[in-house]
Length: 293
Image (cartoon, rainbow, N blue to C red; front, side, top):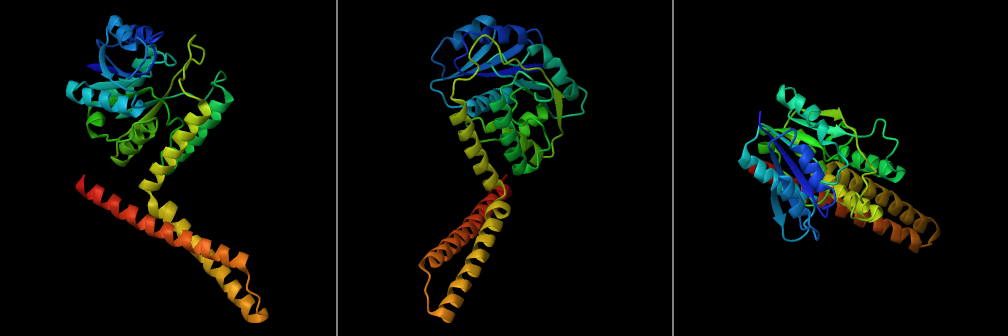
């Protein structure tokens, strides 16, 4: 079976050559998407034997994955493997991820990292757990590592999966799309290296994690507006009505008009009604999108 190995990379000149060379031991086809690197990532990838897609500017990991998925659709490989270009994942474990695809038992296989990873920094463990939890809220994803970039996809999965996010949220959106299309998603334990000899992240972990979290919350709200915005809006409206009733009762009994309680009531009612209206609009948009797809 033809295996296409896809590698998104950004400023990885020190390690991308090694990742490509090791990946070529398990496939004759390796494509790297250089997402606007300022260094020699493209040159090193080509020297190592990869075909390179190059973005003129840095667009984000999701944009790199979109270019790689587009290439994979035209390449028409039996199995498509994505692996990050920072050297943290081991290409030697590519056959392990491909096994459930080739034997027909899965459409997507996630390489999960967290059962016994003692080398992972605590802040990364916490951040990934938070992101996993939010991702699961979007489509009830019962997986241990929704943020892993080491995955295998069947030919059918690559054709079906759709995603729009250009950042790191694409990893979650891909799984959501797979789940919504009833694709069979499995997991396989993989090793991960956090001491690769080079810097494995080009962004501040706090700002990066916060940005991903905000985008994930936005994705969850768009996917389930009635559940998360509609119910919240209804509760806020009820609390606003209760608080307003208290203000009116207090005024009738004592002729005392409470400005603080009035402001709270107005705020709760305004937010509640706004949430309900927005949830209805988003729900209608989602229905229209689904009817067209």
